[in-house]
Image (cartoon, one colour):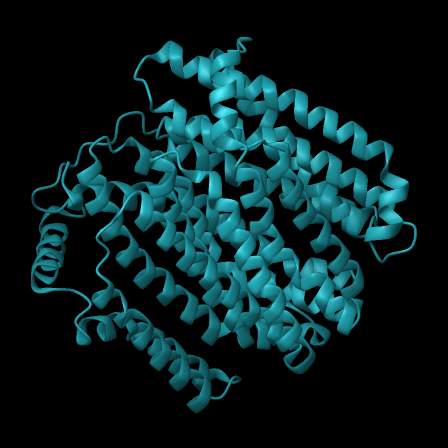
Length: 504
């Protein structure tokens, strides 16, 4: 399969997954006024901290088996082997996550008063964390079946159903029952649990009991080294919280939480790509085709995600005024760096696939731990002077270090011919747009917003002006546009309009 068709395939899958991710992010934005009006900044800070603790603990609880499932699923084309791979991971995770949830629930009173700031709510928040870990890990593995089946529409539909349930239950628990930060988490995880049960029913043909111990050992050998890397990854995201709390107060932590809610809006696109990327990248059998495809994907990815990050950074002040109350408006200073960090975060995963292809991921944790150490230094230097903005820029430093180190690691085990001279032109265009928009255009009023929208719209022309696209790619783009015009939106010349196998 050609690189162009591979790019079209990953683009199509990412676009469909993006529907669910866009819905998730939009719902998070739509619910932000509810959260910020029903919760004080300190309460919102506790809820955000609990949500992120779930993500960190889930990394350890999943034992790397979700990643291993993607890698080992494509080792064989035999359906029975693939079912055995899933069942081995499924029943192992059922046991580990249930055990973890029971232990955590038993220790809830002791943990709660030492982690959270709100009097009387700590133990209940820990119980929500226990529920969240069990549901999150097992739903992630079960829904991964849609991804390896390339049923992106089915996956996205269930994501949207999950969001609708979350919104409805959050309203009930926050407004009608006034459960505070506990209600926010209960709405999120109870809604996901309902969808998880529905997925189990739909995928019941895959759920027969099987535990292949030799296969499990091989999967753990691949997956367990990812646990410290994953934990370090979320440490990079979480470590700014205690530093900010140490040099400031709980209200500042809540403002930082609001900045992350809006600033990570770029992650709706990054997450859509990541949902499609592992199954797609590992499904390419030929190493040389994989190298060419990975190189092409990185350039297009950074250009597109950087464009989205600058757009969000320039429009952030208006989002804050629309969605939050005045105590949260200070989050604007942190949104720009948080948005810019998102493409670097996704770039790390593009490079990590090359390492995973060689099953040489034993040292991934060293890369991420080094990035976490870099972030600690950046936090200590930047937060006392710049507050929440310093926390945001420390994330850029950390993700940038993580991306660079993983590229170096990938080059050692699976060299990919990235076109660095071309990629280096991307930040030139983005920096120019960001500086012009933020330094020369005010951050309030209707006409400044129109001007900033115009600056964002000109970024693709900036890419063309600096030569990011070569002549062949420009000709190809023109052919695709002409094909779309003449065929009413069907595939461009040379491409097939047939759907991918298994796409629902």
